[in-house]
Every structure is written in structure tokens, then in C-alpha cells.
Length: 161
Image 1 (tube, one colour):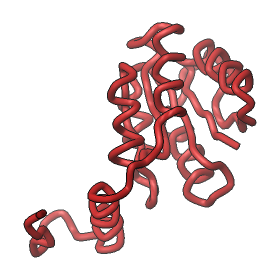
Image 2 (cartoon, rainbow, N blue to C red):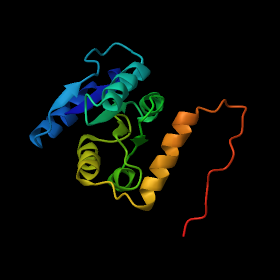
Image 3 (cartoon, one colour):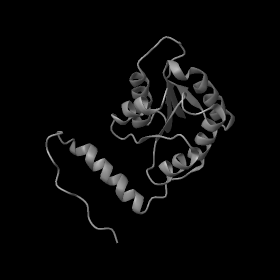
């Protein structure tokens, strides 16, 4: 099951993408708003992120005006790697290299058909592992360490061969 969430600016596109996912045989849990009244995108980004991080949903899609605000909110939840993608190539690589578990885009940035192409590229891509897994593990270390902003962490980088 995939989670989907949106703010007031993305109701129409959310419904189109939800239908597109279902046409591909993907069950969808809708955490978004259906009201055109102005709302807080962060609330919906957090709901999708918590559903993905807890394992309730396998992955998620978040849509707001630009995709940026809702992705920032989603990325505040440990275990989330939300990527804003406005074209298919970045969506594909976000999964292959970064194992993104939430795809974000903007209803005011991409049109319907481009949004479907972005979603399809992301859905069809697979995480490559290998050298990329080391980077995902490093991201997990950063999350665990939770350094205060003023404290500079010791470098954990080692030269790659």
C-alpha cells in the first residue's frame, strides 16, 4: 500500500495520481485534504511520512504547490528520504541511488501527464544498493546522532575505492 498526501493546492492532481496508481494495481491510502480551504502542507507531509516510517505504507507520494514545503515536512520524520522531482530522470535516480521512499512534486510546477511520467519513472526504478547503500547507512547515522546545530560532528567519510 502506498500513502498519498496533499494540501489544498493539489487536490485535483492528487486524485489523478491516486487513480493512476490504482490503475497500476497499487492500493492507496489517502492522507490528504479534499477541502479547497487553505491548510498546512506540513501536516499532510508528516502524516504520509509517519505512515511510511512505521511500515503502515510501503512508500508515499506528497503533493503541494511546489513539492518543496511538503518534502521538508516529510524529511523531518526519521527514516524518510523524500525527494522533490519535477522530471522523470531525477525521480528514477532518487530511487536507484538514494532509495527515496517518498516522492514529492508540485501541482503548480508539473502538469498532469508529466506528473504521471514522474510517478512511473519512480515506481519502475529499483534501489541499486552497493556503493549507494553505504551512503544510505551514513544518512541513518546522521539521523541517530541528532547533532545540535552548533556542534560540528567529526568526519565519518572514508575515501571510496
